[in-house]
Length: 130
Ligand SMILES: [Zn+2]
Image 1: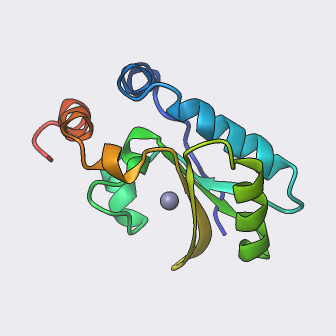
Image 2 (image 1 turned 45 degrees about the vertical axis):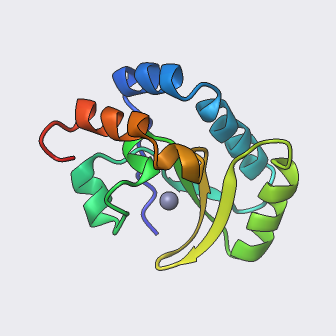
């Protein structure tokens, strides 16, 4: 499994933190929690549109703004359970995905992902694409 994740670029970090305060902090907590799980590794974080397409991501994926992480461990269900337990005080969602096998941790809520604010940010950073 390739391990070539990218940190969100500073301009995106700054704007998105202003628009959705606290979301990156939740991902940071998720990383901390993952670091306590044997064999867990970060496989994807920020993805630009080309990379997102290559990864089979949704058109409006949270990865486009660095608001989701993908993690891998040999036992995905146990990893997901560990993360949900550690992150129970946060609003992140933790989802086991099979193609390819990983745990998707998303800071952006379903409601935020549908918001005009989210679309506006996508249009700001990827003009002409959204
Ligand atoms: Zn993901």
